[in-house]
Length: 50
Image (cartoon, rainbow, N blue to C red; front, side):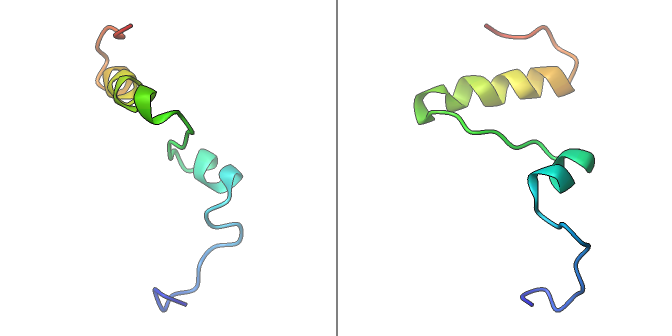
């Protein structure tokens, strides 16, 4: 109701976001910077950081 628009069936379920190319993950706060850097490297075709 917030957007005032009709939303697709299953909107914002894990399956919906996976099928539509969204990235969702759970990680400990101390690991967050490293995880984000790894995903940026992956989508920009750079060698993965350890």
